[in-house]
Length: 411
View 1 (spheres, rainbow, N blue to C red):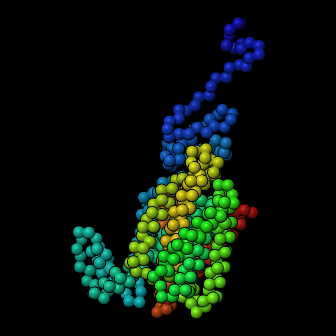
View 2 (view 1 turned 90 degrees about the vertical axis):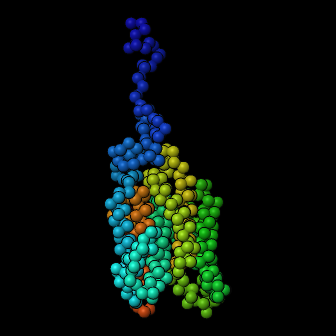
């Protein structure tokens, strides 16, 4: 019958009704494959838990099992997890304040700390000597250990998210080698300028990372992660060789150099205030990028399809993590394994989403290094172990276990 819709006529294709498509608002991006079956994926800026509007994104063209298997873990930081992390940190910090060559009463310490709060007046009952021991010796040491441990763990988690490698650590891009070289130069050439060592170490750590990043981006378009890692290895090897040369030319200062390299927490309030601004900025920036790191965990192509600038996110997180590492190294020397051990433990206990891993790693790293410092100053009292030795005793077996587990998964 002429004009019938069921008879398109010779040389014509039958009309195919358009597939219904969900309306896409400003918070959604449609990324369908060429076959026309478009899928609506939520904007990563509004992604929340599974099963809610804006839940885990399904990327068109990617396997359906990618999200179900946890390829892009998305979770909220539950109040219970945060409360547990805060409790563990508070217990470790209190132990660091109480335990030492001279014991302090628990009640007196707690009342003294509460009495320092605004609009609170309490009599702790501590003697002037005990109060000075608490406020001028132990408290700045505990605070400094907490800040350094938190920064190293946070930086390690950030590096692992950027490089998608569970073995990445804060010293991957040359921060340790750069700090070691400049600190060695100051200790060897200007022995009396002890106060310049943290500033020199900070400048060296930042310089080492910048050199590695410049080398990595100049040899590969866009600075791929593999190229950055290789550039970091090359820069670290070169700077470490220079450091060894300086050490051999100034052997009379070797003991001081090795003490700094092995790490230690023996600062005062001035060192706490020295790194406080950098610690706050780097921590806020990294935690704010936790959701975008979850998107990057799926892959760069999928992140781009969701409207995420993967290169920009990677650069911002690397800069923040490197700033955190440089700040920590400046006041503590080179303390290893914190950036590997703590994020791994947090992932096993709290899940793989970086919205959870980053803030919990900050608290867990702080608690871990406070305990490590407590062991370092009490295990062989009155002598004191370098804190890097304590973290190595804990971290090396854990690192071997991670390697064995990774190998078992690959085979």
